[in-house]
Length: 609
Image 1 (spheres, helix red, strand yellow):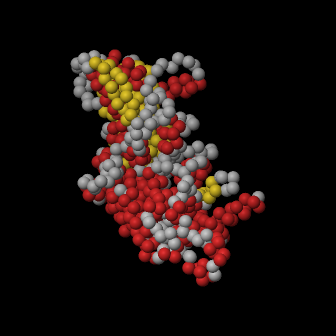
Image 2 (spheres, helix red, strand yellow; image 1 turned 180 degrees about the vertical axis):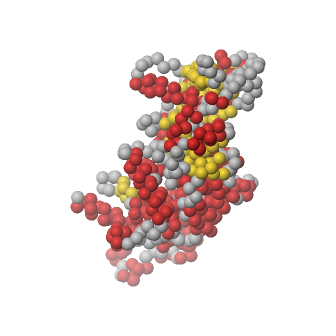
Image 3 (cartoon, rainbow, N blue to C red; image 1 turned 60 degrees about the horizontal axis):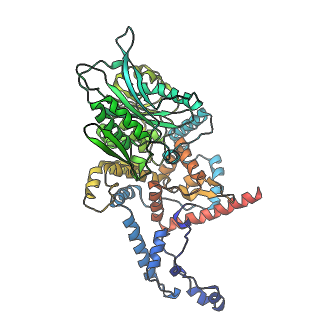
């Protein structure tokens, strides 16, 4: 329904009125009418392509259109589409094309879909012959039953839309270590908070509960601290998840206060609804600069910052500040157009992990397994956790996500539901003692698995996994090839390349989803699950989909598309549109014929009910 051929044009080009009028059809004989039939263009075309067709001086007489002119037009359209796709993306696509093979979607008929359920009941399905895939599916179904609720799925896109009109941040706190009475250990406490919580409302009480948890995340390693004379400042982040599924990000800068002799560090923490690591890192840079002069200079700056609106994507806000000795200053805070990778640094993943290990972790997360990262530094845990979740785009991790888990909360790893958590290495001995159920434990310092399931190499479709691995192994080569070209600047970076490589994996596996979103006469959208899966030509991808389609991630993705009043937008949708344009004629015609039959049947059933 949202595929390119279904777009409605406000002003279709008049030059495309190539069919003869009804009068000429009535007056001519059959042979004359046959001469007016035109060969089909071998591809379906987007709105931009149609405008290009209008600009081409096509002959006004239908009979003067021959195969050569149509072929030339099609070549022009194809070259224009190629120019729209960055060269880096074209090279990534070519790797997948070489590994995958030619055919992607099967021709489907209504009779084959109608009898599919009967065949499944009377014979083994494609994946039943492999107990491993059956077990994966059963586990995900069991997880959904454990949740025992009508899931309210959250997506990054929805959260950005919901909160972008609100203030820049909710709270600013300073957390310090206080010595416990009669003990030589320290306890983290909030020593400063802005704004103050004055009114005893329900929202304020909920905020107080959140504030109580913040010190543990700012100092997850509080028990290991003693006063030090030197310490390099460290930046990290954490995430708080509310009972309603809402998420808040904590952006932290841990630094050593100015002074002489051994002393304890303190953490400056900004709590915000939005994941914009780059923007808040700049804020924390300014906080650290002012703290180096005097703590009294930090608080007026944060007050003026809170009065500023959160900038829209691609926009900049200016915050006026005053600094003794420097006078009046203006701090510019800008959000990039694409906020998806704003808080992500893929470099840390390749510093800590080999490509093969990274793909194994990615596969485990896709099947919503339990994953535990272990590292020496807070910044490593924070960066790698956020980066690996970003690989799942356009899907969103729906389960427990704690980039840095305080040692006092380590029992969370015994939870039977999926999670992704990070632990400091000092907690590793305690972790090994706990009765943790099946989980993938990753040591980010040594690029090895502490514990694994031993099937991580078999979870993804074999050919697509090979394409993933090859594209990531060649990442430096692919980027350098584009260094002197006019390709998109944002794409020609490590973050851009890695994102595109994983997006192509999802395009190859679920890129045809929009073809199976049908709409009733009431305007309600419904996803045709079995038809979607069975339309894939590759047996290994069908097996993968049978498992993946039971995940909360996939369910949230489809629900988001079903409930939308307008077409989804974003980089993934752009790549999907380009992918659908690439499909050969036979695949397109077979799919369109099937969808027409499916739509007619749904209308009949709707009227019957």
